[in-house]
Image (cartoon, rainbow, N blue to C red):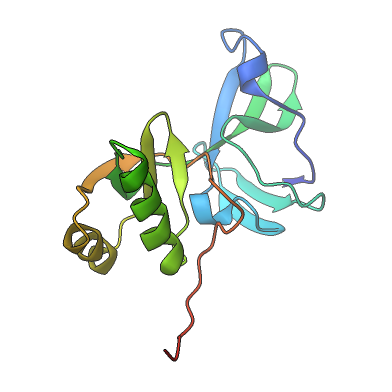
Length: 153
C-alpha cells in the first residue's frame, strides 16, 4: 500500500466503530519524505510525504470503509527534566541547545532522546535529569534530528 497524504487525525473522531491498524513511526522519522514500514497487522506501507509537514501521532494515512491506518509514535528512553524556575529552564535549554539535542515538551517536562554523556553533563551542571520512557510528539523548536559540529574556542 502506498499513501501520499494525511486524511485527518483520530483526535477528531470516535474510534469505536473503526478497525484500527497502526504504523509505528519513530520520532526521528516524522519529517522524512519517504518511508517504508510494516503495520501492526503486517501490511507493507510506503509513505510518500510530499507536503513536507511532519507526521503526528494519530494521523490517519488510509481509510477504506471502517478500516483505518493510523500513525503511532512509539515510546523511547528519554532524558527528562522538570525545571523548577527560570534559571533551571534557561540552563536546560542552553545545555541542550549547545549540544544540538532535539528538545520536546509535555506539560512541565522537557525531554530529549536518552544519551548517557548528555545525562552526565546535565547532572554535572547541577540539573536533576532522570530517565523515563516517553512518546516524543511535541518538538520545541525546529531541529528534530540534531547534529553536531566542533567549535574552536
